[in-house]
Image (tube, rainbow, N blue to C red; front, side, top):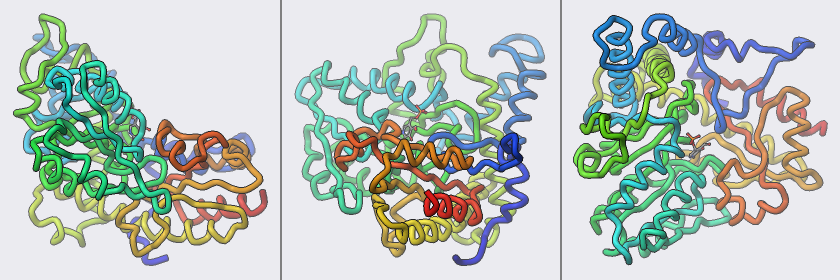
Length: 423
Ligand SMILES: Cc1ncc(COP(=O)(O)O)c(C=O)c1O
């Protein structure tokens, strides 16, 4: 392991859930981050404060409503900073990634003509597949791009050949929530734009693991969920303003017709927005504290945007060696098969999310055994059904998934390794 870039004791102290124990006083190990991350106290406080001080609907002529409007504006601004969006008006909040993708795909579907093509990937969570496949009802043809089962990389050659003048939209994940692969989004954007197609990016899994810059990626839409990066259950889509303006929104008649509000159907989870802002501010503070040595790498960003880029790079620099250690060690345990990129020299192309199977045990048995030791991991397909089907593990119960977050420690990884050895 290389130098520790984060002060874990100080960071972990900010997360009340990380202090939890069972009745015997045994601490919990949260390796379930790809499913759900824990929240720092500042997020919890922001949500409680909202409910005390700003709990009102928008647009009223009284103080709690004004405060609420401020919370909404701050959340749009914070998310725009997180993604380096050109404008806070390009951020649409909603219940979660799945709901937002269904909602926007319905709007995008209105622009689809019979014979138009949509490209989806087998490496994706079903939330970035099913909403697009549903557009077949509109006459769209869905083309699937495969991945290489050896290293779980997207077949870029095939993708390039599938994107043609008929393609209207390409939907890919920034990173796989099953096997961790990070896709070359900027390259895919260039392929899509070459033929005038739009690129929809699911950044839900990637968001807690690396800096996102929608302008540098030049995608058209990017969606993420705050509960995967230390916030509450709120989803957000960024879209290019002119596209959001052009798309029809399904809304009730008295609702605002301007972007982004026309897509924010019904009353938002406003305490969740307060929490999302706090999660982004938590990361910005982490960037100030642990990422200032990276300032030159991000000289084209200012203020909170810069702090966030520093934070996410500091997180990469912490998580990557910890993951390398875990992967190297886990492979020494007999009967374990890991999936995805395993060469440390290529770890830039993956998140610290490890999927594995073990001879003689089902993934559910392994997860249950670890659960008894207070080590929380997921098993099954985690809705990345196309991945487990393609890898041929769906029928045998999928894979065990161990997801590192920046609050995990080497001691926790060692506890996992010991438990797996003792199993
Ligand atoms: C990669 C990926 N995409 C989409 C989703 C769905 O996100 P949400 O729960 O916000 O709908 C998840 C959730 O696990 C995910 O990991």
